[in-house]
Image (cartoon, rainbow, N blue to C red; front, side):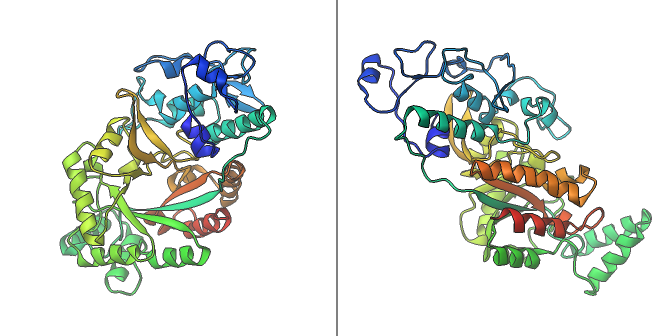
Amino acid sequence: MKQIFTTMLGIEIGFTTKVEDFIKHGDEKITYTKQPLQNEFFIRSHGLLFEQGIHDVEIQVKSWDNVPCFFSTGERSNLPFDVFAATFYLISRYEEYLPHVKDAHGRFSYRDSLAYKHKFLERPVVDIWAMKLFLILKQRFPSLKQGPRKYEYLSLIDVTTSHCYANRGVIRGLAGFLLDLGTFKFKRLVERVAVSLNIKKDPYDNFETLIEWHRELKVKSIFFFQFANYSKYDKNVSTNSNKFRALIKHVGDYSKVALAASYSSFNDLDLLRNEKNNLEHVVNRPVNYSRMRYNRVDIPDTYRNLIAAEFTDDYTMGYSHKIGFRAGTCTPFQFYDIPLEVKQPIKVYPFVLHDYALLDLKKKAEIEKRMDVVYQEIKLVKGMFISVFSNELLGSNDKYNWKEIYKYIIAKYNV
């Protein structure tokens, strides 16, 4: 309720379970029970918010003025569904606690989500519900006013591999050369040699271009650097490289710098803490923001580890290969730990677009069309459009000119 009223609508609220206090209250009020008391504004409760633990929940998705909704309430309720229970179900990621088959990286698949199955993954339904609720309340309470809220765009840059060829040391450079030679990747071989001879710039080294674009267009951004040892899934430049450290400091002069937690730290709290502390020593300031490698989120354990490592904000809530709102919202929210029944001190920032989700689209025009629709949905509810691009894909031209696509997105959606 605080997420809907206070965060989204800017309306302060209070709660009471005493009937006499509710009746005496002369201002706007809502009954959230099974039965109304008098003729007040009434939303019939589903029961989910009064339970403890996790249970199988029967869900039938219906349409409310062309907006998907669930947890129907019946005719006496002023809303046709329990907006509070439905919101909680989505933003708490209730469905991710239920039995499901994880993918190869231990992730919840978008295919198992209620939003994907019922075709509303690309709509911020929670925010839409909140705005529609306000309009209905405004009819009942004309003096009710909505607090200030404005649309925002935030660009996240994943730097899990800062350079493709440069700054990797003699041994790793030679190994890469022999691998390219042995697999007949002659184009990479030529590019590798050109970079090593300073004839050509490393393709992943697009930091100056990004900084300049962000400055020019006044784009709010966060660069997430991986600062981890080499492993099967973590193949960045060595953390001992002075050039790599200098790059992080340089970017930190123009943008916020945060931690792209390594694949290996997913279930290793001590390693997660070490990566955080080591990056803090480089930038000489606290690192409170996090993103997990491959968008790996295992609820609730991932957030418990992030809290134990003293992160305050996380930007992993989304799907790597699908456009959409994993938590049904384009508004940041505090993580709620259902088994512990407590709101945790970490804020979750849900992203709607990861660059790899665009690989399935066949044409640049199709990308623009799909993203324009999403943008309009977010703009309408004055939410936050968060995109994730990796410097690795931005340095690739295999399918698209990715820098051109990125420039289009930040130029058009940062308004």
